[in-house]
Length: 628
Image 1 (cartoon, rainbow, N blue to C red):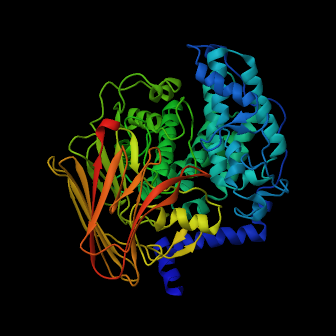
Image 2 (cartoon, rainbow, N blue to C red):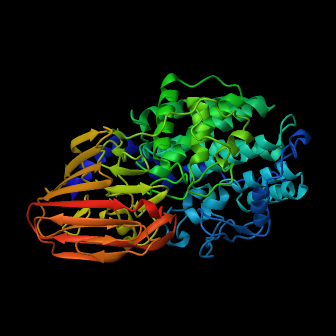
């Protein structure tokens, strides 16, 4: 195990390990309490409205309903069914369980992310991201009703009174501070034009930049969205202060923060976006978060008339946008549930469901590609309208089969182009969050027929974490009742897998894909997927295990499935498995999936078990198109 830990530390990068240790040392020694002391915010309203921006379009009943629900104390958390949060909300309550933080007055550096008194800290942070500000601003803009502006200012005044600067859990994370800053400044841009900003907002931006600036090294060490989000926070906050502050000292600080954030963003985009467009976290929802981040950076750059970013920045932003576009379901806007999912949905400027990625892709396509990714009028165009971005005349090329060798993803379209398969194979450049090697998702006409289990939560029980992040919650094979990689920590696997024998063929008559890996104990799995004659064919070659191997197929729970000989079928589709070896067990079991953070629901799972030996299992998947 020590050898595994040393090897994993080398894979993570010794410099990054050192950055994390240095952050923890400074935290323990009280450096941050000295550098960022607790202080009380200036009282008064945060937002002022410019008359020319009010009631400037048709009334949007959907946004008014959402805003009215907020004013009645009801709000959706992580895309779940709305729950009572209060008005103003209780900033220190878990909105789902109603438990509260025992002491919310400590300096932020005195909290631990997963201490027992906090349960899942994300349930506390979510309301303090202030995404609700954009809903209230939009409601005020379309209706001209002052009660939405009054509520916006009342909630922000309450937040500042309860969350004094650098005090309490909502200041713990530099990324959360950046997201909050981004939402508040975007709300300000939608409601204020020529008027000067309020002293409260000015101070709010300064204190947030100070907070973000102190822990950027720790963010960079994570090699994930923390670094890009915090870079955006500094870039945006600093540029805004340069534009809006009359204090020369603050302007100089703003310029320094802007330059640091801009440099950091450029560096992290170059480092974290692979050549094929895959973002480092190997996650569909974090790919969306990254695209939202760079899209906001580019929109603000143009809005404040700042110099353009580098050519490499735009090349990688374009690649990441096209990547996400290729995986978004064109009928629903949904994406496969692959990789980590923390419920994040930033900068809500449209009336779509939580998992609908079309607004993100449409806005990013307009800004980076100058292409229209979705045709016609729909909620995917709303963000562009709010931000005064024109819908491009030229349409992006249709989605197509493609392999992403750097990130370990593949998209394979059936020859009828109505069904498609998404596959995963190992990528060892960045740390894997799930043991999901050779998992496949299958979709047809907006229905996710074969699906991934998701993440569920970051602070759940060990058994739940092991299940959702482990091999058992994916459509792949599990050797000897263990994960494909050993778990070394809450978010860390060791012995990262490497892809062997990768092949890809996008020919029109029979598209196919194949990849393999050998794990740290010598177990070997090769999977080949092809489409032909209206059926998907999955061939698994398995060897090297000691006791047993289990092949799992996790199927859509929205229809009734029944077990048949070596398979499962429903009105939607049928799966039939064959092997020269006799299956020791064929069983339809109850499994779990999590499509929304902290929500899990059951679904049927076909499990086929084989004993020791060399085996080949062939799964034939037929879809009943008449049902869809």
